[in-house]
Amino acid sequence: MWMHLFTVALTAMTMVTGGTALGASAGTQAPGFSIADTSGKVVRLADYRGKYVVLEWTNPECPFVRKHYASGNMQALQKDWGAKGVVWLAVNSTSASSPEFKTPEQMRDWMRVQGAAPAATLLDRTSETGRAYGARTTPQMFVVDPAGNLIYQGAIDDKRSADPADAKTANNYVRAALTEALAGKPVTVASTVPYGCSVKY
Image (cartoon, rainbow, N blue to C red; front, side):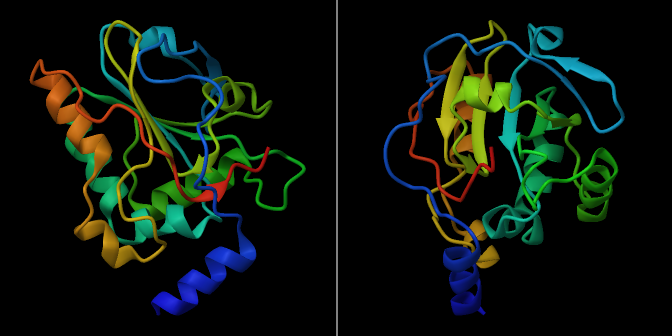
C-alpha cells in the first residue's frame, strides 16, 4: 500500500521539499486577498480581523492532500479549531489550464464527500493569492493571528509522506502553533519547509 502511494506521488506529482518559500513569511503581515468561494461569495482576509485564520492550500488530485483527508486528519483539525473560533479557509490555486483544475461545483462536491468543515473553500483563479503567500505545495499551511500577522507557515506536520497512517503519529505543526498562540504563548516553531505536490500555477 505504502509503496504504491509512494510511486504515485513520485511519478504523477512533483514533491517539493527544499528551499525557502518566496512570498509571505512568519513574523510579517499576511497579504490581504479577496477571493470567491465555491458558491461565488467573495471572502476577504480583512473580514476576519480579530480572529485567528488558517489558510490550507489544497488540491484534491494530490496524494499528499488525500493522505490528510483519507485519514480524517484535516477534517478533525478544521472541526476542532473551528469550534474554538478559528477561521479555517481552504484555498485552491490550481490554474484553469491544468488537467487538475476543479470547477467550483467539483471542488464543493469533493469537500462535501470528504466531510470537510472549512469556513469556506476559495478558488484562487488568478493564482495571485497563492503567489503572494509563496504557496509552493499542497498541502501548505499558514496561520494568521488576530492582528493580521503570520505566526506560522510551512508543512502541516513532520511526516513527509503520502501514507494516511502517518498522520496519526506525526507532530502536527498547525495544531502546535494554534495551541500555543491561543494560550498566549509565542509559537515555538514558526516556519518549516513544506512538502507535497507542487501548486499547479
